[in-house]
Amino acid sequence: MPFRVPPKCETICLVHWNGMGPEGVGVVDERLRVRGVGGLRVADCSVMPSLPSGNTNGPAQMVGWRAAELILEDRDQSAPSA
Image (tube, rainbow, N blue to C red; front, side, top):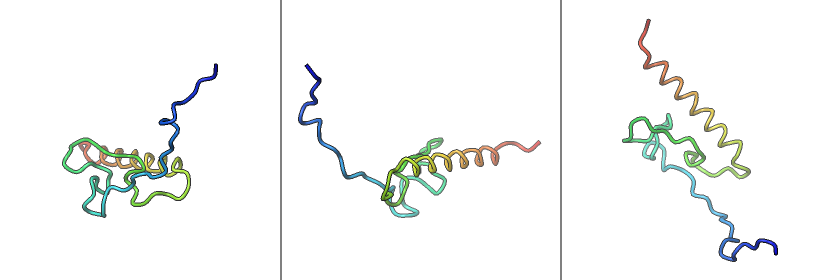
């Protein structure tokens, strides 16, 4: 007997919440740091101001790439000078 998915599990979500709020008042700052929480960043599509019209895989990778650059920049700035 083949596996059957219950009817309530067959729905697909077509609406994705996106965006962290207006510029300057969102949950994260321009360096993807969560406001009011030290040491926490958000690096996913929720930081984009609007949902891309296509697949979100590429944009999500770019957000992650940029987050990595920001983390390294912050690390380098806070390192003591030799």
